Image 1: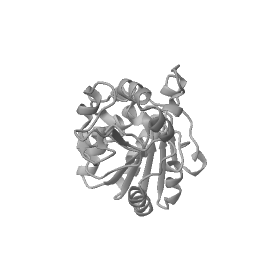
Image 2 (image 1 turned 90 degrees about the vertical axis):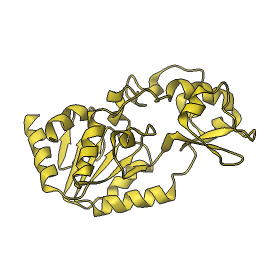
Image 3 (image 1 turned 90 degrees about the horizontal axis):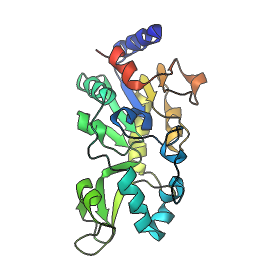
Amino acid sequence: MEDKINQLKKMINESNNIVFFGGAGVSTESGIPDFRSKDGLYNQKYKYPPEEILSHTFFINNIEEFYKFYKTKMNILECQPNIAHKKLAKLENEGKLKAIITQNIDGLHQKAGSKTVYELHGSVLRNYCMLCDKFYDAEYVFNSKGIPKCSCGGVIKPDVVLYEEDLDPEIVEKSVNAIQNADMLIVAGTSLTVFPAGLIINYFEGKNLVLINKEETTYISKANLVINDSLGKVFSKAID
């Protein structure tokens, strides 16, 4: 493992246009559960399957049940950035890291100080009235009773991409452009099984593709370096 850490450190030092692509595993060390691991949300028992609850159809037809789950399982207001978030912000501040592309909706990269963050699946920190588009912060939604309502009477919807909903084409375009221009792509904390997000890394044509995940992922054959360990542990040693 020490050799792999040193190899990663060398790659980072020799790169000038790094892009980071991250999934749920980036935030687990901040106390936010992932989805697909053995202890993840999708392997827990609920009245409805979590993947059904987090769909557009379910939100429209069962808003009250949606918010019961959402307020219990998606409330990240007390969560703080971990070492991985902080190290990435440091790399950006040094000019090496050009963009973070995240599948997470927790806003922890920005909380750690990162500026260029492309949120493929939106953010719980942004919420809008479905009638008048008035903005509401996460505190308002999570602290509301029942279904959060706007002052106009409309239902407030989190600005997150639910199943059956399309990704924001502008965010996808910016993500693809960042990856195409990168000389190093670090993919971490994701199984790369969520599409179309997982397909975006196919646009990488740079020098070094690095995969960091506790469990094995797809695309291993294309990677220059694969590290099966926690991101926080790896980054605390690889980034000064």
